[in-house]
Image (cartoon, rainbow, N blue to C red; front, side, top):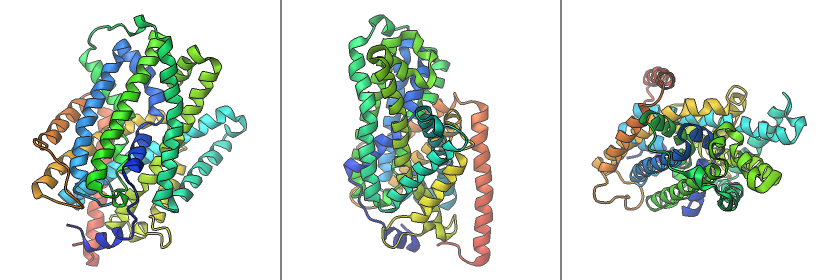
Length: 442
């Protein structure tokens, strides 16, 4: 199944991620700055029916992650969804999947490190200026790069610790806020209009995505056929329950006022029952949550640059493994460097617009890959994940994605389409060059 050079390169990586580490990485990659930003937006659109959008997203993600598990238990190569698609459909479709993932990831991290710098600047004014922000961003990225180059175990431990720290403010918010709910604020207003609900689901899905990020270091996961399914279902259950409780508490405390406060909505809600200490706790929680997300992303996303180098979509230099630490150090440094420079042109608000359609198209490719891998009975390590009727899950998931995408704007679809056209042209040019040199991978 694997190319000779792929197998040789992968053998240098250390399989160190088990169920706890991968679960923490998924939760950390999912619970980011989005949960602080979206409650107000969704409340403004759906009011007390906001929880419906969360339930729909949770059910949709259940279908999606089942499809990921079906594919991931059969392919244990580094690259996650990109690797699943490439093994199933070959270099070109795999390359497009990798491009969709990379664009989503690099735009996300560039927006979120900028958000971290802004948050730090609000606490330390001297760091809020034109010189302070670059310093904060550089320090954050350099610190996480150093940790992850030293080994995937070190990076995973950092992610596990940050997951606990970042969840603490949100758990305090939920459990303390339960004693201050106003029942009338949660009164059922009737089923929301289909178009409004669909658009809310499309926007809110940004707070749920992240599993595809955490699955990128597939070549460093222990017993992937067992670890991947257990980790993704555990993480999905944790995040969905947490999100619904956060929305209900925020709505129950603030009612219709929730939609007015944007990114600071949870801080304002916490101030209602915990005073200024609650507001400060949630603002710090926003910064820590964003930092935790970046830590998880640096653990995972650079592996797509490594995979591109490994598979000759990029020069083989990008596929190098550190001789001492056995990590893709060149890919990690390259990814962080791009994130640093892009952080000055990307904002968190642009992030959701540019990423959601790309992520959903990537998901469709993965769902199709799950069916193809099953049809060909491709096997990696261990017995593949499956159950009676499993083939229907990716088909239903595709239908759900098409419904969600039907609520995207033309501009969002055009941006993603343009990126795929450019990527296709680059692929053709690269393949032509390789053929002329007589180095086409077999």
